[in-house]
Image 1 (cartoon, rainbow, N blue to C red):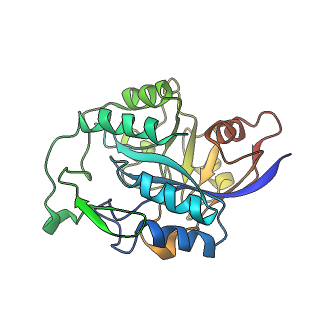
Image 2 (cartoon, rainbow, N blue to C red; image 1 turned 180 degrees about the vertical axis):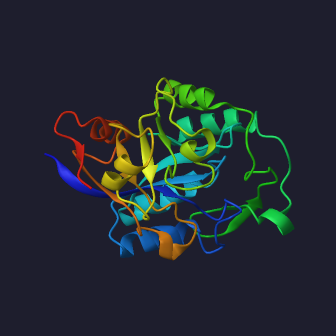
Length: 245
């Protein structure tokens, strides 16, 4: 039986240096319930270290959470890598960490808090998570697919760190599973105004960095279950699954 899932596949936590301190696992899930989201994906900058805590808290509170990362390529393009299991996301994190130079300076870039599901501080990540990796776009998409994840070009309507702003187009052979737009433009308008989207699947997400951002933009997916396989089918529009808006 197919159902409609209110979905936001781009939520940051307090691990991302540009996110608010209040973006803790417990508060993220509480806010997701308040705005009646069914499914979210945690996609912090170049790291998956808070995925486990948010997934655990979501499980206790009826919010489905997919683990992921927002990876910055060497072209300074942001790409979402969303997975079905925590193990896959952590494997991707190790790939990213192996190609991520630099150390964070909290006084300049912001703090990077690793937290528990009880909102306790475990540690502060010392890596330069806001920076670009040495991985090319093709490398990121290929590694994501090798781990059975979905690869989405992030916030393609924005003037910075989007594939269109950085490259001017979307390579036909890139192999991404879809593109993401922000609340500033509808998928319909994006197809007519942004070069290169064409028939690619287009999702709307919040890219939430603060609690009030969560659910500000979302997509409704018709699926049988909130799984990575079902999301992939909805993106492709097969087996009755689809993006409704």
